[in-house]
Length: 177
Image (cartoon, rainbow, N blue to C red; front, side, top):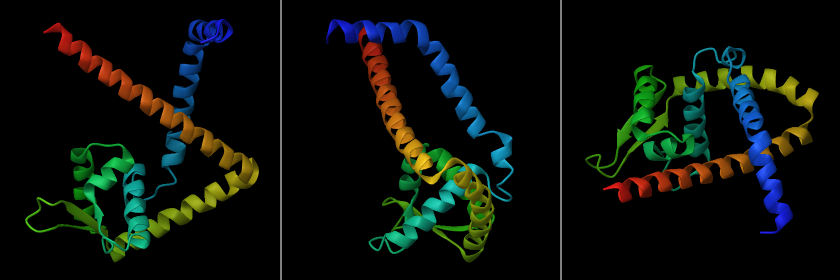
């Protein structure tokens, strides 16, 4: 690593990390605040995302015949299978999804969307389209696409750093014994 790059990293580390960390946290908060939640009339944001994942999987995946496995939902939402299971159970109790399993269940459980679930998801999507259609028009489609690409890159870096920190913590615990 060159001396200039090393100094540049040190400057960032020392002067801006606190401010930038705060800004990232603040903007994440703003994107998740109650104003956005108010657009979801009958589903929570995680429920909406899960339902959307199920619907998308049903439309694009011929291999599993419209089945979306619980583990796939959990992986896409970056949640534990236990958290996802509780959410899917709630959706099932509301009649929005059907939850079943292959064989005796040891091969995996899967979810399909019901007619009532499809209708509710469509209602939620219409409310979001109305709002985000105006946002996209004001902000600009190209700006939004560029922002989403940058956010994806940031998420990848953040995930990698988090995984490395977890590995480091596990390795540290192993040396203490």
